[in-house]
Amino acid sequence: MKRLLLCSALLAPATLPASAQDRSLWDLVHPDRIVARMVQYAVFAARTQVDTTYGDLSVSVLDGRIAMEGVEMTIPSGLTGLAPCPIASLEMISDDPQAFDIWGGEIAVRGVEVPTSSLPPEMGPLSAMVRGNTLLIPEMAVEYRYDIPSAGFDMTLRTTLADLLGRQRS
Image (cartoon, rainbow, N blue to C red; front, side, top):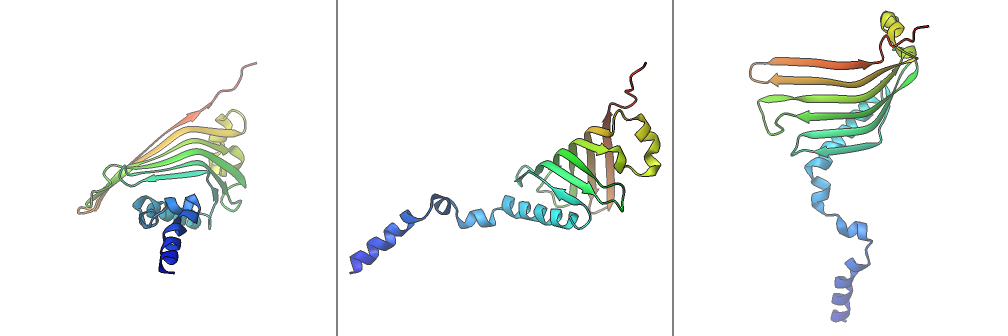
């Protein structure tokens, strides 16, 4: 009887599905998984203000990198117009993920399409320069550096806009 129980206990893991065998406790507490969950909570918080969806999320704590693909945001009509704003990719890269006294890095947003109908009235001149009904932003990057001991903060924003003043002449 003891041998039968011992054999059953040893063979039980073989009957589990392959996905259950491939996971361990380390998969549950892995830093990449914890940070990915924190990013998902940030998306939950953003959804209270802006309808936000994404296709893929990848995180590497050792590289200091968080990337989201296929992001789409719909800005509520109370803020501007009610129009979807697709974003091809969003990437956050840390300069040194192990530094404790300086936070720095870059947030890069690529492939942004902003419908001119969702721009506020103050942006009317920009809307007039856009070809078609969509403002194309191929890339936008924010570089930041926060020195914790001195409370110094530097930030640089750079962007490119596509197809401005691209009207055809008759």
